[in-house]
Amino acid sequence: MSLAEAPAAPATEKASSSTMRDILDRQKAAHIADGPPSAELRIDRINRAIGILVDHREEIEDCLRHDFGHRSVQQSAFTDVVSSIAPLKHARSHVKKWMRTSRRNANFPLNLLGARARVEYQPLGTIGVVSPWNFPVQLTFAPLADIFAAGNRAMIKPSEFTPRTSELMQRMFASAFDETEVAVILGGPETGAEFTSLPFDHLIFTGATSIGRHVMRAAAENLVPVTLELGGKSPVIISDTADMQVTANRVMFGKTLNAGQICLAPDYVFVPKDKVSDFTSAAEKSVQKMYPTLKDNPDYTSVINQRHYDRLQGYLDEARAAGVEIYEINPAKEDFSQQPHHKIPPTLLIDPGDDLKVMQDEIFGPILPVKTYSEVGEAIDYVNKHPRPLGLYYFGEDQGEERQVLDNTTSGSVALNDVVMQVAQDNLPFGGVGPSGMGAYHGFDGFKTFSHAKSIYKAPRTEMISMFRPPWGEKFQKAINGQIKR
Image (cartoon, rainbow, N blue to C red; front, top):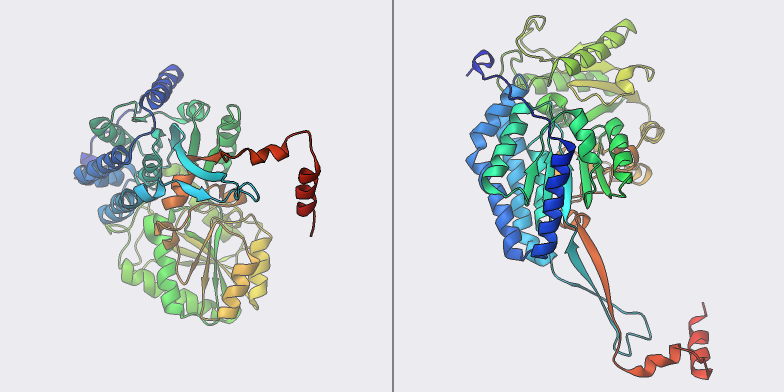
């Protein structure tokens, strides 16, 4: 079906504040009435989530294709279906182990008298999930894997920028879950603002740093703890020891996948001064192999909408006016001035000034600034003078230099000799630091994020502990004196 034949985007009816609050109240009441769910019920919820992904796979791909103007259905199968099922299956395999009581040591001398300590992981209740437009399915279901494993219920506010996909997810969840288990709330920014003001037991937001500030402020009114998955400018440092073609293959894949609309996409690259032409040449070869054509290539995704297309073109116009060398990678030399979608060829900007918006904003598109350095310390200093990024990437074979980069930079995560793929590791926590986010999820770390770690202390039966109560005598003083030492 062509875009012209596609049905009109569904209207995302605005959910009223009272409707949202009613759903939340019913979820909280059900959570209290039913008590903590068994491992079997948690696994059942996970299985139902997997089931609706499998059953609606083609609809998901089709909705995403139309919401983006054009999006590769193979990419959507990989990034939004497979990458949603994987964390759900991981949680299903491990939930019983994660639920186990964690035994801890009671402090001396109470432990010698029979005191015991433990931690039990308790469901929080209802988790609010605000998911973005760039991977709307994956960034809804991946946190749900940990939310369900931890025994919680969920209310989901998907993006209004992908209306077909959001409406589909509402139907998908309604087909397999009662509204007291999972509810999907449709609507625009006003609905989103009201949603984030609800008194959830925890709120996870994935999106722009600028919006994250508003989300955190709204959640603070009800003292709702938040996990913020934001973004920023994720740097790539390419060592003099790196294999340039392998490096370019991986960097350009990360920059062109989803047309660079990925929170972890490489945002700028640092290359040794004498290796710039090597990188640009390798980048061109890489793109040409992946995308011999771009304009009508079903594998190459569009920019989401006119607003973001204009924003990206504005970066290029400003760089052009500033005299920056612009290296457009357009293998078939196609004319993009007339096109049905919002496609932009992968474009390298060679040594743009830091006063340009492309070096200040998160790019979120297929534009890649290339900076140069003489010594790796320069690249490290540059990274440290800017807000801490969500991801950082180092390519090279010099272990000492690799260690220098790791020890002297702070980022949410790191990939060595690759980009983006750290997010696909279910055993690694995923999250930002500072302006790139707070908190983390994925796997056991996500289970803990969406659980309350309840500390439990059990006193010894013996009344020898009475020595710690007044009147304090010689035994008490001796015990205290024994602890006050170096």
